[in-house]
Image 1 (cartoon, rainbow, N blue to C red):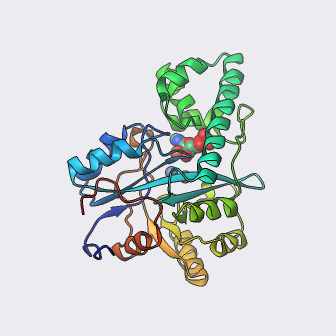
Image 2 (tube, helix red, strand yellow):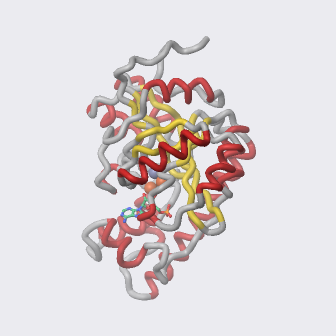
Length: 293
Ligand code: AMP
Ligand code: FE
Ligand code: FE
Ligand code: ZN
């Protein structure tokens, strides 16, 4: 049965993180906060994992918020970081499951190594502390090291810890395994999902892939570009809309909420209801969460 088109006034935020990756709120609290922020639809898109979906489903029913199941896949193009949002994927798809598992495992090894390097220089952090803070099901990331360093009084904020020791140019930085962005786009499609490139023009985060790579991703089945994002300035947004038009892609907007871990606020950027309709029409790997009809 095709879904009826969404209410034209629906408030839709398609990119958020819970404590199953580097957000600070549980999936249930995140969904409750989404309801309190007046959102009708929120996507849960933790880095490289889907362990928060079941809890978000229950919370969505409780708070009458539709939750789009998603994942933000860390990708690497010749060492350049690319983030790919995969919505409505089948979480049991063997190729996707294997790739996400490989990335999460590599994130663990890499975080342990970074902690060892920091501890050897006297920074107040240990791997057991990181694990205790992150919990068993979380996809580990640099923000977990930052949170331990902040908790132990070494820095005042995640931002300070990143600026001093966690950024990619730091001697303490260690990389992790990540699939290529074209391959990841193909995997999302193979798993019945919808692929949207996250914050494609956020130059402040580091080197960007050339637009030609986005063209290759489009040919591999990419559906959209996340243009309305706080890390894009007006010029980058204009370029994103123009590139999307040229490549026949949709554009989305989101908060990239991380709870208390970042200043981003739920609903600070929104996605048009017609764009969500197109996403729902193109994804078949998993139904919506928290949705009774
Ligand atoms: P990782 O996934 O381990 O490579 O860490 C990258 C994550 O750290 C990103 O997804 C952001 O959520 C977060 N991050 C990057 N820079 C900062 C910063 N300056 N302050 C707080 N969080 C950051
Ligand atoms: Fe993050
Ligand atoms: Fe991202
Ligand atoms: Zn994100």
